[in-house]
Amino acid sequence: MHLTELDWECLLHLFAYLDKDSRRSLSLTCLRLRQVFLDPQLWMLLHFRSPCELRRDNFVLGPSLRYLAICWHSSWVKVCNTENWMKTTFQRELCSKHKRIVSDFLESVCHMCPNLLTLTLSGYGHITDHNIINLLQSCRGLRSLSLENCARVTDSILQAVVDHGCNLTEVRVDFCRNMTQAGIDKVREKRPEVHLSALHSADMIPDSKPEEKMQTRRTLQKFLIFS
Image (cartoon, rainbow, N blue to C red):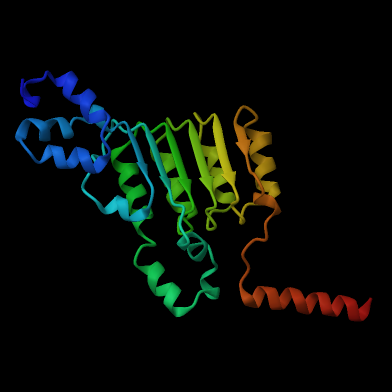
């Protein structure tokens, strides 16, 4: 019996065991397998391990997507999470080549995946408040939001959880250094039913521009002089 003679459910089951690259390769062999590849039922979960994977055409993005994770564990994560004014010209140039990839992808998710239930983002320092707030407004059924080591996100996202995350039951904002204890406490006060994890976020040193640091230092010096 030839593979293409299997019924549709069997083919979907077989495809489900393959990674994204293998699915795409198999789909290029004939029209029937290509149709299986394009079946929305096959793409309820997407897990990416680096931003460059988002540029490939080995997956289907659509309203069937329920679970999305983009987790980047690389030496470049530290560079991306460094304040822009501290980066070298070389580092800024390299970041410029990929800093919009995840943001643009999330914009597509907002338009194409209204039924998303869980979102996990880890290690991507170029994500901004706008990206997450827009997604919370577009995917109103979102139940779980997990942000880890995302340096650009701030308390604005915590406010959006209160305002727009009506179906959220779990929120994780671990190692996000620009979130404050006040923002975290507000979510716990306004949305006590949400399980909120903010591991080390409020304990980390937030970003501040060099001129802000200098002004703080001068204020402290004046205080010491006149005290």
